[in-house]
Length: 205
Image (cartoon, rainbow, N blue to C red; front, top):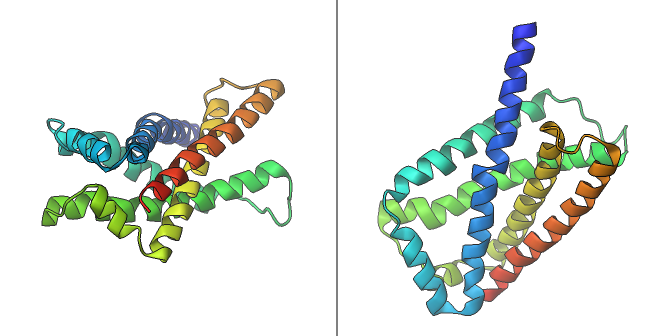
């Protein structure tokens, strides 16, 4: 029993770490890179070209994005299935946030896999272009645009709320006052990141 508990503790810490460090940093970088579209087509295409020209990029993507994503998503689904959460019976705020974290995680996973296929995997397999015009053409369909709005909002919420939980998990905000402060910062981070993400989508319209 003690060995099982220790294993779950380690797996939980790795799950938190994967979501905050490689995936969280990639999310921030990705939001920044896409936000360059607000500066115009030429700047966006120049920046994307520079990113695609990074040496050993596929290896970096597999090691620092794909593998952490697979672990974080897989263990996250396991946690969601094992957790006893009932927001209808226990309607306090953190129970709802726990429930929302699981739902947003599933939405984010579907969105990220779709986004990776459209703008990364299909580019590698079929040599399709990844530039301003390609993104603009893809977002012209209203349903796809709305799906991206939902996906961006879900991803930024999942990261912001996960960061709040991670600070507790790692013992950084162990007291009530620290958690209330980090909760306010969680809301600010979510609003800022969501604003940047959705603003970027409109830059392609």
